[in-house]
Length: 349
Image (tube, rainbow, N blue to C red; front, side, top):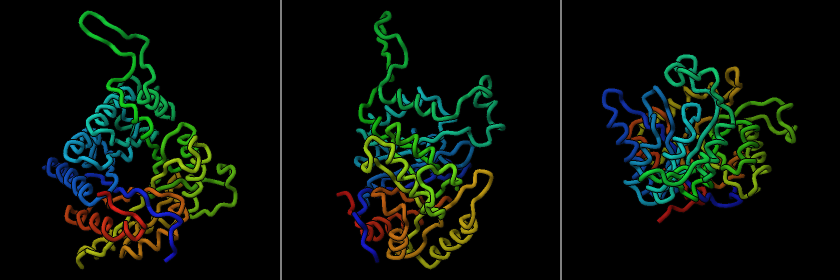
């Protein structure tokens, strides 16, 4: 197995937090228990996905507020919060509050674009402004400014018995450096770098044409090559250059401690999803990475062969959507005790 140029520095995981509509508390409790387990196993970070009008976590900030009171060390992130559903000022208040409660452990990840199924939800979400809402990068810029302490109003001072601030309160000074952008295109990577964010990469990228890939002509057009071009584009435009933080979020399912039934379930899951990895999908021409299923040794070898993985030192491996709590316990345990060490990572004591 080829040796890494440097050991994996940070190991995290991502969960969607599914629940049964008839018993939503059990699913949310499962997510919190998984985060607690992650801390005990020495993971550096735990991330939750954002799902609206689905049977998955719709309010990651609330869930992470609860997690902040049940853990002490592990970093807590969102991967990602789609800003089309959010008011940047209100979100900035919520993020700062949870960051304060967690002792500075929050890592908010965000993305842009109109909400999913916008035509069906816009009257409920923006009944008076649905045709004028801006879902582009300006929405992220507003959030960044507010989180970083820029004034939200020209008024401050005392009015009667109340004291007003001209910036979002509470203000958490370190949070601005822990803002992440979930990007799958060169434009997103470039914008995130120019605005001093960190970059979340996932198992989805945009298959872009050569005319959109300035400075990267001739790069490999497979998934790993495209993702590598995003990492390099991001760092080329970030003030921190090669030291700018990038986290990779592939779906990884080690089977070292799995039962025969679990291994069969995992292999069937990956097989069902494999056809989407063979060619760009849909009008957006999205490319998907294959799920990595196998022993930790096998997965480590496949990761070292991945061009983008070789240029990062942080990961937040994504847990599959539809598995059971016991499956996640086995997968996380194998990642922390088998795969992580195979990648040069050491658990936090």
